[in-house]
Length: 212
Image (cartoon, rainbow, N blue to C red; front, side):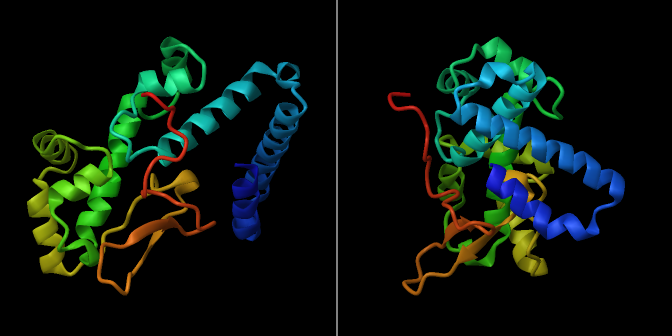
């Protein structure tokens, strides 16, 4: 997380205002201190606010990496990070969305991006939904319609007709870095990778607790 953050600062630093640069600098110092404290087993030395922000950042990344896992739930997230479900909800209280809503929103954004991508046109809608953790086709269709005002099939048809490649939105990947798709010579559906560091994203969970 620290490396990703510092790389983003290097990319965007020249465009920052002095006030923004000061805020980001303070965040960088806090993040670095949290990393060092973790490796030195000195987490208790950090202020509570810093510990909570670091924990929330780890949880956010865990959610991103495990979106394809159908059993990614608030309870599973709390258990993996050894915190209570109540404390998990408290961490997200200041966020725009609660934990379950965050998972649902990010899954739907990934599905919408795939449905708008011409390279996924031959892949059934249910397969795309399953790729991002939706095991119930009817439930996915209801959630998609509630979020975007139309059925997944209608959205795909409109994107195909208009020839649009719709934006993936700010919630795609940690830090909103976006993603790129690789075309396979075999003609199979492409595999997603994060654009910044090439780590896997969407191909399956990496750190989901076993036995869930």
